[in-house]
Image (tube, rainbow, N blue to C red; front, side, top):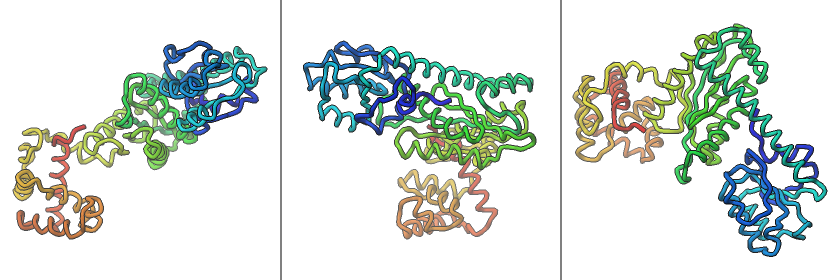
Length: 410
């Protein structure tokens, strides 16, 4: 069950008749608790994600402070401001509502006849109910991935508690969260961001019979097919998680790196799927940076190459020595280091695009003729005939080994 948002809180019977005065674009903000504000400098006592209820008594004589209140509360990170007007303040300043709209911070109008205590009790009861279900779900995910749940009857009983169908095959996935770089991130901010990502993932995978658990900077997912003898299609896991990844990136919420494990027939093997997913996300971030969705097939060659070892260490113009490199590739590495050139990255891109120079130019953000020139220079330095498949294979394998043991780690 997802966390309580402002929009969902507005559907509670205790909030019947409440109007949205401003900040409608922030109705997806999360409510973790509710509190009453009838004293000045309330922000000293807030931690974030509160539904703040007030009559504005403490600020009744100062429209300027009422306007400033919006910025102060938004900086703390409250969920919404619920005001009972016409008790001490007849009319809210237009600039106050405009500020709330600009910050997408909901300002709500509570009916005069609704007691504060009814709102407090209803909101906190709903927060507790939802958090309890999420805790059961998270505990179940952790136990499944650790191989703790082995008895089918126990599995079924716990699955019923969270409304999940454990039948059929399963697959594990791991999501690593990278917050937007421009935001200052402390433990509390990262925890709230992780919870928000988990809610988005939970909403996406529920229809695919999924469970979600979140902690630190990672979200763990278990998907089950729901039918005995039926595996989980890897394409389903990819499409569900990729939709969340793309949506959160588009909205600037977070960059997600995703690893998906190998589908398994039974829960005894689910820890193996989880370890594979962790390896996929870690290798993907190490090789290509954050923001990739990686499946086992994407990194299969790197698992083979890891066994060779790093040899001489990070690449700084000369290659590591554990894997014998083609002399031509060695010359290209040395040429790039001495001339600050881009021959090796260009070669890698052209090979990835199966020799299509125009597509390679598009990926490299350079002119087509620049790629033509670089490839001609590569032929001059190496004497290669890249129409030979065995030569292309050898060079591609060695380039990927360089990826693995270079200094491009995160």
